Image (cartoon, rainbow, N blue to C red; front, top):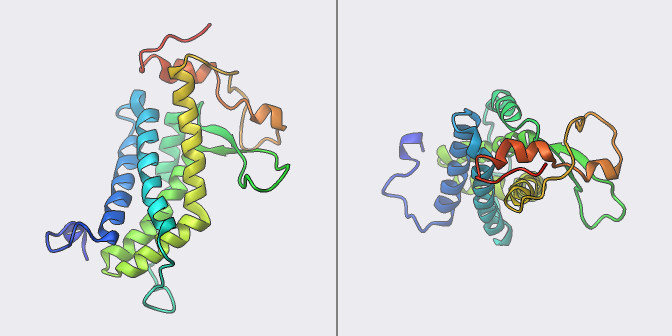
Length: 219
C-alpha cells in the first residue's frame, strides 16, 4: 500500500484499521506542520487539539481486544526516519514553555515528579506512529494495528497523556489569567526538587501565548 493508495476508495472507511490510520496520519501531518513555525501564536492550542484527537485513537486501541500479528516475527522496516529536526524545531518554538513536570505512574506511591519536554514527547510519539504507518502502507494492516496497540500501552499512550496535561495546563492558565512562577532555570538536565518541578508554567508562558489568545497578562 503506497502513499497514493493510503485513502483509496476501495477501502471501507468504516474499517477500524482505516479509521485509526487516518487519525495517526492526521496527527503526524499536523505536528509536522506546526513544527515549521509558520504560525507560532496558535501552536499550543493547535497541539492541544491534535494530541486530544490522537488519544481518542489510543483509547479505541486500548479498549480493543488484543491484536495478534499475522507473522511471528516483525518484518524488518529498515532504518527509522530521523525526528531530530522535528524535535529541535518544536523545542525552539515552544521555548520557554517546553519543560514541564510529570509523574510517570500515578499508582506508584511517593514518586517525585521528573522534568520532561513537550518537544521530546511529540517527537517520540511520532516515531512510534510512523513505525506502524510503515506497516500499514506496506499492506500489513494487522501488523500496523498490533504495533499501534502495543506501543500505545508501552510508550506513546502515557507520553501523549503527559503532553496533553501540560498543554491543557498552559491553555487553562492563560484562559483563566492565572500565570504561575517564571520558568527560567527549569531544565530536564537539572536535579530539581518536587516543589520546583511543580511550578512548571509561569509568567513567561502567559507572555508567549496569552496575547495571541487575546488575554492580558498579569503583572
